Length: 168
Image (cartoon, rainbow, N blue to C red; front, side, top):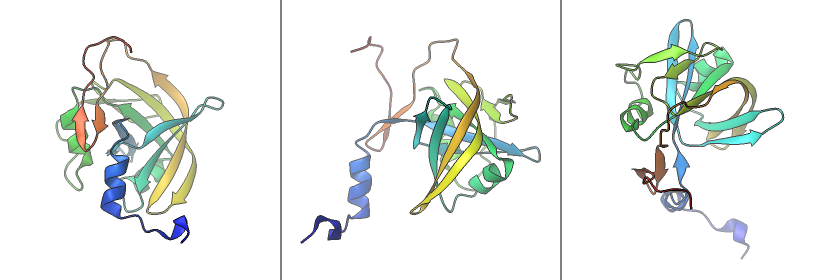
């Protein structure tokens, strides 16, 4: 029996992937004066030259078609003090922006107050992959943090934080 014919059970697959620790971002954009955004765990760097980053989004996302139309987005990298913001932007349909303080990036994308830092991007490419779309963005502006915040991490289905120890 070839290995390719073994069906991967979805819950087991999800559990296996949960063993990879990741940061948490909120991908934001703005179209016709309306801010849009969603919580995104699948963010990573792609290329240094040109400066490219990527995230994946479910094909059925309500937010992404608006971001695609705007042709630009910001990646807000969350700090460990922003669990509530992560949860708020992960919900479908609710007013995700209720009580959220933000300002406009150089490209006109919402930068969420208190984020560790942000990357301002234009959509560079899109690739359909299963039930998701892989979006690649070219970074046009960024801001490095002035205060020393810690990242919000996600591991095995739970938020985690980094204890105040030095580098290993």
